[in-house]
Length: 190
Image (cartoon, rainbow, N blue to C red; front, side, top):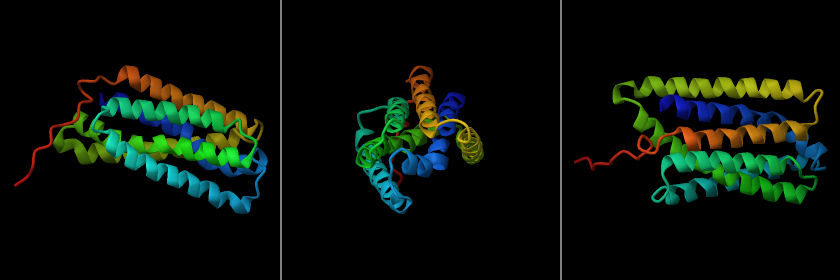
């Protein structure tokens, strides 16, 4: 199960790294905005992410970690693909806000899945491998997106990345087992 969760996360990071590299190019060329206003786009995305973490924390009582991780990845991928077709700055802001809300579900769901699949004595090692892997895949994604951005339209690259993230969500939905994804029992410490 740990491999499956890691695969879902790494596939999603492979798609998400492109937004980090190409979003300013997309915003200036496709959304027709001045680069001075790029901070507004980033702030709106941050507000969506903040709302998403709060919402995911509340929803985690009723939604299993498997459903939250997979559903969040699927929604982010669909939002990413819709965002890639925008040509108006205001629509881009609105979609960027709504696309960022499911991002809050990823860390809220990933933690319990990782804890449930990892023996206590291996937790630190596994977490360091996961963090290093995610950073490495993000770096590869940025380099690949920048290379592809030289001869492919940015919107097409973002669409492909959105599809990749959505496929990671679908893969997680069917590959992560619900029994293994159950939240560990919390016992009060006295």
